[in-house]
Length: 289
Image 1 (tube, helix red, strand yellow):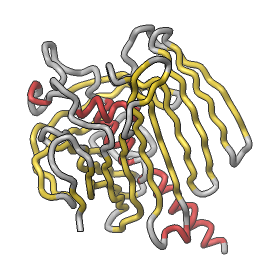
Image 2 (cartoon, one colour):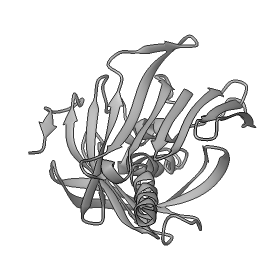
Image 3 (cartoon, helix red, strand yellow):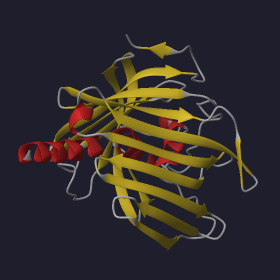
Image 4 (cartoon, one colour):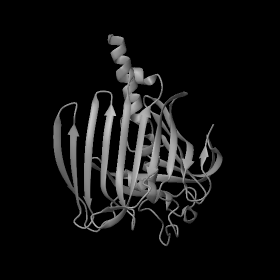
């Protein structure tokens, strides 16, 4: 029984990190380019995504498939505080027999202003074994205020925290970064450029650098595709093993799809890879066999 509990705890730790790959790896690459466009660079003339877009991923720990995840854009415009908004959701869950040992069911979401892709409201519903978190984040760019309301069900504990940033500053979260990332004109960059950004996540402000490595070819379940490669330069931490332990690939086409992300962690290697896409702006739907 003790061995089973230890195994369950270890698997839950692995899964909790791996399920953040579509978000914390793909969107980390996104967050790192938000304010780092060279002087004179411009965003794409039109957003490379449409309402109703659905991207699906498989998650691996080493050679083993441990789950699935999806990124879904709302099929209609949402009204929030007088603004026309997208709603973007990221969800993931364990696959097959792993549910016997440890269950992970995570959902992240954001309501994002269509005009400038800044978030106005975000949420997380996290269930990883016995750990449960409900988080609601209210963001006001005009006043420069962030209010974070959290409820940890496993401890029956509620908290409310406040943070401040410069009023009028374009402040993004991890989810809105996905859309911003896809709207970057990478033709304005050169391989070897190092970009930077100060970012906020959970309750901390971070400073990141990212190395843009130019065009690459990446093999995925939807084919071998030309892609932009980003390598975030990780600060010292207890999760990722090395400064260049995270790599992110985006399709080098009109859709700018997040294709793949890999991470070398202290507990092993994890990855996420796109398996299907639906309702993309340019091209037909695709589902791997």
